[in-house]
Image (cartoon, rainbow, N blue to C red; front, side, top):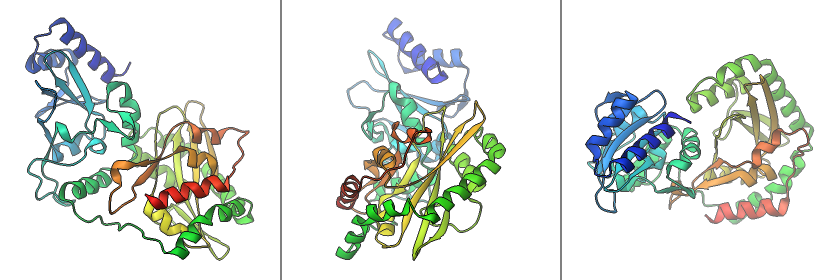
Length: 367
């Protein structure tokens, strides 16, 4: 049982035994039991941070924390314990799970982190996953794949209702035709010599860097860890806004984005920005692929597989983050679920079902 789970059990048990215990009493008892470091109103352990609040009515609208203070704790689970008359509720309040910033936020910008968030600003559900303790592991795995800077930009836009920096892509008729022709183009690409050479070269780089990759998986911060592994495999050479490596491919280009999966951990790595991918696919000769790296740290093994982004296993696992979408963006996607884990099986065969892939792309266009 993790320290977060132990703490939640301790607090719930205390409340059930002493129903009249309020926020101050429960907080004091938990602090004596856990002995965390106190950073103003936040209690910090080596694996999570907690803020106590209370709500007497149904709604939880109290001010929770300033955004600048949250930044200091956002790399680990930030739990809000909401003490009510008859129970204690718990929510994750990392930046990914905030809708906007409510209090004193008029001057909020990406270069001026100001304002605070209220309990009503915390999402009760994220991409269909309830923000409750049973789901904290899954939720935090999704949060880890999104940088503070990306969340900050989203919160600025949501709070100030400003125009997003990345303008929504509005494809022409010819561009839509090119996008919907991508499944056939990608299916042909899978059998091309250049595609096989790219997979061979990346796999060779991965094997050569294996000791460093196994060392890098010990890094706790998922973004730093992912970036380190990407550099080890793809190097510091030619890159693209959608990927870590670019190679000539016929009359176009093959863009490859390295994705890492630790086989002993729950994770949901970010896949791509929908508008950027549609804009890229509108180029008739372009192909986009993931080099998916699986790391089994316990056994000291690494696996690599080059797949187009329209492979069945990838499409089945793509989830659009709805709260990132709006009038100026179709949103961003993450790889979640178990479908994409099967790509590491020896029996796995890449496949593109062209009709299903076209329906998937049509859905992205219409968002």
